[in-house]
Length: 269
Image 1 (cartoon, rainbow, N blue to C red):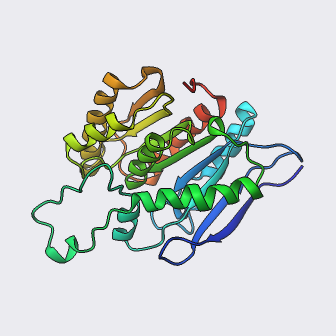
Image 2: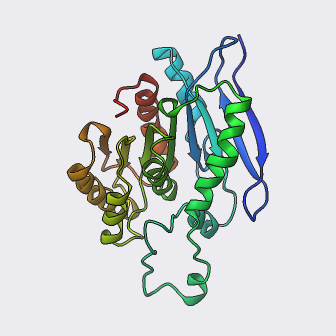
Image 3: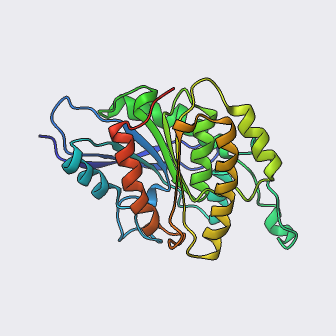
């Protein structure tokens, strides 16, 4: 038996310092392989002690899944330890549309807006994914690859799934920040992105604070639109109105997303 382990990698990020990637591989037999979930905000995925906002406790979630179903997954956490505006920029794709900036945002803040979600996506696909598949015991192929994130990371997860359906079979879209785009731009981009094979989308939103209420409204708008043009069997939405916008809420819903992904409770058409 090979013990569970977190491995740290430093990989080159375009025009910035090398990015920390942490990879959790559960305890396994020699030769055993796992599906893989790529996740944003790796700094908040594994430990309470080192996380500013709390932890998703993904290791514990995988260990519990191993005990209950015998299944598991490798977790690839992509860190973002930069300023909040840097995180927002790299998890905000330009191709969906221009950000709708409120009038009250000052000029100096507007100058820091640079939608670079596509750069992050290219980093994941061209730099991170090849290293993970070369160095770790992962099951390769679309049917074994998922993406997951929350808030701006939920937005980026949605973008990754729809823009690269040949790579990802499922996405955890938790508390996605849709409100920064106009409804028309969102609808237009979604329609232009739908292809023959589309991933399973696991949506989640809360409602226990003002931000989460706004995000829930945006998620419901997108979900209602998708129902009209997306395979219904590839959609799921969970709303827990009492939950706030925090890691404690996402860690609980992640357990169900992980369980769904591991047991393949959806069709990959």
